[in-house]
Length: 430
Ligand SMILES: CC(=O)N[C@H]1[C@@H](OP(=O)(O)OP(=O)(O)OC[C@H]2O[C@@H](n3ccc(=O)[nH]c3=O)[C@H](O)[C@@H]2O)O[C@H](CO)[C@@H](O)[C@@H]1O
Ligand SMILES: C=C(OP(=O)(O)O)C(=O)O
Image (cartoon, rainbow, N blue to C red; front, side, top):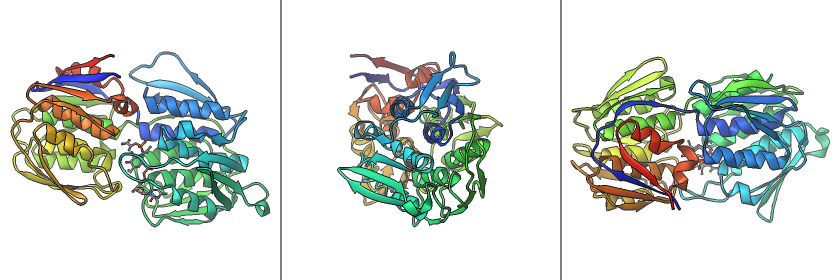
């Protein structure tokens, strides 16, 4: 299994181009199931999760074509055509690899009237049930049963093959639940109101793509979405929003090495909380329209408190990376995780690198220190893995990060992008 070797202590300087967002691209790919016409996605990142989603859609019968070479301007261009769906089952083998697979539920149900989707199960960061996705489908007229680890969903016989608009009230904010609800409601008969909807930029991206496909959606960017269902959707050409988590991760790479890096092809307006937090630590953040420069050379990074929250709050997907930065700060920091019940799996590994962190329930107290020390480490999820890479960039000596298939789920050419800015980092292929 490949590993990453880092020799830390080199301030990053240079420019890093940011790709399309994994967490926007995955639901956008499933939106292709809503129409028999072609959906063209541009600025698609090249990631293991995108390949998993492509395999899942292909086994449903979606035709996928990658067009030409990826360029900085367009990323990858992928055409998806769901004119000939042959199989309405999302199998366990693919769903267990990636929880976002459950996003085929809403589109398949709405367009074909029934489907069978494996339950995703828990993962390293929490139990992550999908009960709210299922309740949302029921609110639109679906009958749901569970058997043998699968969700069986079908539109009630009385509805003549078309979901019916209704009111969905989410008791807690769910990104995936909102995405499934939006896609199902887009083809339902009548008006659907989604109350306490997630407001993440990836939801806005999905809503805008659905509008480009002919959907009628208002309230975009708020916590109340209104969808007036249409009988059919058509094809579209849509560019995936830049990845705010990849952007934030490299911003922290610049800060933790006390470097100076410009991030290009970004959307600063989608990451206000992260940029404000970085500024509070003492990093200089210079925002352009599509660029962010992180100047941390000579900066004295202060320890500050952070709590993860649904958007527009500080994202849980940046919590591990921020903890690595706080481990090198001057002073203490309290980091509270409110979204997932088990998202501190990076703490023991950061501790092995000399970080001083104590966890009390959903909060971690981090006492910063001038220098971490390199060590062999291993992580159990995507953002935990990258937090160890960040710590390695700042640490004295050699760090080997094991199990890097997690990183390949969400970061395209991570080691190349960092090495181009002066990091001493390489992939060791086994
Ligand atoms: C592919 C993708 O976009 N993944 C993101 C998405 O995950 P995902 O969509 O899975 O996350 P959710 O927003 O649904 O989860 C938020 C919380 O709600 C709970 N919950 C969710 C659904 C449900 O039916 N029942 C329930 O109890 C979850 O266990 C969790 O505690 O949003 C998370 C929160 O921003 C991010 O960390 C993930 O990177
Ligand atoms: C938790 C993440 O992804 P997923 O929801 O696919 O597990 C993530 O992107 O940090």
